[in-house]
Amino acid sequence: MISAIVMAAGRGTRMNSKYAKTMHKILGKPMIEHTYDVLEKIGVENKVFVVGYGREAIMNHLQNKVQYAVQEPLLGTAHAVMQAEQLKGKKGKTLIINGDCPLITAETYKLLLKKTTKEYPLVVLTTVPEDPKSYGRVVREKEQLIKIVERKDCTEKEIEIKEINAGIYCVDNELLWKYLPEVDNNNNQKEYYITDLVQIFRKYGHKVMPLLIEDSEELQGINSMSELASATKWMQMKVNSHWMEKGVNIIDPERTYISTEAEIGSDTIIYPNVRIEGKAIIGENNVLTEGTYLENVVFGNNNTIKCSRITDTKIGNDVTVGPNAHLRNDCVIADKAHIGNYVEMKNVRFGHDSKCAHLTYLGDADVGEYCNFGCGVVTVNYDGKYKYHTEIGDHVFIGSNVNLIAPVNIGDYTVLAAGSTITADVKKGDLAIGRVRQEIKPGYGFKYLNK
Ligand code: UD1
Ligand code: CA
Image (cartoon, rainbow, N blue to C red; front, side, top):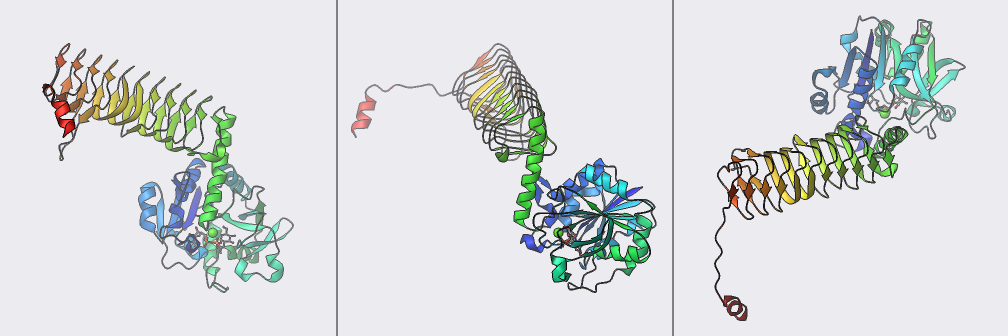
């Protein structure tokens, strides 16, 4: 059985933020969820998250997908692990994970698990970063880890050590709980350090392995906003390289942000300053131009999205959207539709080859095929208390500046004259006109202007 203890109770003082450190996002997803996702991916059965500072937000986010242990007060990393009492008495291996190390890949965790054996019941991920900063220093003798010394407890000589502790461990669960009570707080910070396990394991004759990982950036801990930014950059480049290898044309990968959940087909062109968050499935040959923001979308192929915001929406094939359109709340846009500039749609089904080119709001509406909307059409869907539905058939021609007072039903092959306020249903094949008749007052124009 594989278990994991994720330590996420700390405040993250160096972040200078009022939010729990692990709720800060990387590519739109909290650090803590990156960690959760990778544990899920490698099949960890028991996932215990140790929470303390800002725990409501973390628990709200991960809900009952994991188990929680509350740490209060915060007395150090070993003290955090001690709170995960759910795991006492269980057999198998336990991963102990710093909550602020969200970049570690499934492959690295799998290697760590593999290296943890009867001979080496405790394995520690280590790396050699460019700058060893405040990381714990790794004292090794060949293949054996002797001890980890926190930066603040280092001798001058130890500070010079280049290999550091990444804060990720794998341990035999029964031995973990056997030796945890021996960790004390005899150090400069008066904290219970999980790193003390190394010497305790050795004292009882167990070997401890430092597992050196080449890519120190993958192992980086996030303690400040600038480290959050560099972690984001690392993940951004990893995701973008992956999609470029699959044939996605990312014009400027430095300025393109794609979530780890997105899928993108080849020959889709992504211009700079595009952001894709959440689950997004985007087919082939789409064009996403500057300033486009997508979240939870499913697109077919050959669509062009110009500088628009689209969330929770499905789009078929050969659709054009924008510039500056806003589609949200469960819109479904059929093939060949055209949605032009400054159009907002909310909860709308928009049919095959229908066109809505300019300055329009459609909310809570079903629109059939081959319809044409003039400029400035509004579905008046809200009376201040309730929202109402608008139903529009196929082949409907709607002139400019038409208001449809919902609920209202517009039949197939109908015409709504420009400037009309439509308050009653229109039957198949009819024309509706509802506007004030024009009066002419001869010569009044001159009179007025001469005043
Ligand atoms: C820790 C390691 C250090 C290592 C580094 C790697 C210890 C003593 N030190 O230092 O050797 O090089 O990580 O990034 O373990 N936490 C709790 N409860 C606590 C204290 C911390 O849950 O009482 C959590 C924090 O929320 C954080 C993680 O444990 O997610 C690590 O704590 P942090 O204070 O960042 O440790 P470092 O000083 O970075
Ligand atoms: Ca840290």
